[in-house]
Image (tube, rainbow, N blue to C red):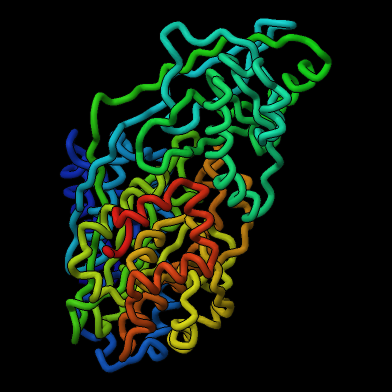
Length: 527
């Protein structure tokens, strides 16, 4: 058979193989696998001719970087997750489809094991058909969306006065006085520009809601922090329960129009219907877990994680579909190297992150008996801005070891290691268990503008940068798993408590209402 016929036969066999898989996973109960169309140069090795197990991460780095930056299924995987499945709110059919997709995509990487681990969310939620209009002094419709896990408005909606409470601080509510009782209070915001702005938003919003309840308000309108009628969705609930009051994000321009009418002394009256759909009880959700077994100490492991769930106004591309696809491709790159690190690497896609890290909390609880064997946990959750390094969340004792282990990543821009900490992604519950964590530091790029917004779509992803993240994450996981000694020991509860105070996490946890869970032992390392 000549070369042309050989290529044709190979193509036909590959097409038949793809057809079988597509037919199998297109059934009503299965999740369709993203169409993977690897160029001829890309293939998972069959097991011969790969790197020997004696090779270090530094020796493997050039080939792994080439594999990550070269032809791969990364882009098609992400396109399928975002364009075909779309937004993936925890507990919804779309989230379940994403779990099925992730299982099959990870199986295609050649890893040793792929499975799901269930947990429950107290209440399932999705938005109904939200609408609102100003009735007086001049009628106009509002552009708005429900806050995540907000209760619905009563049947028939709410008709009430809108009362301006400024920034929602004590002075704003004091100025509104009794007018806030039974009203829809309008809370002003600043434009979102930096990571610090975003952190402040999460820390102050629960206090504003508490003031609204104390004032007897009936509901809240939040002024959008984005311009040009751009809407987004957050939630303030920290345990998967419903918010205490109906709340919506209102387009900035509409909110400012209401504020101008109110400041001119006119009475603003609105009718608002938000028939959100709430389940009658808990709903199940799944984390997706895959593993490459270590060659010497398979019961010891390192985690590489990202979250699979997203909000649903956009398609969850930057937050955090890009990193879910990245974790899958990092598994491919490591397997394709033909070498195994000393310890195992677990690739975990968490759900429930947007409801305050419920999936990673569930994972930490379920795996508590083996956490002494978890050497480090690595997390990506910041879009596709250039990676500058990692934050170690206060673990100064791990700094020197991490610098040394990750020297092969310097050519990819990984040079800055910081100690700042925040309650902002899935590393949180591992930190509370005393595990050294690495959370990627990235330049914001276009992440903040599109954060949780209708504009968070596939076209916002910088694919070249995402491929660099694949290389960085694969090398990081391999280097830490292959290191002769752990980067730092697991901390005791007393040491964790000291870290929380030293980093300011204790204050942040108290502001968010998380401190009682830690103090009681419900969350984090047991007393």
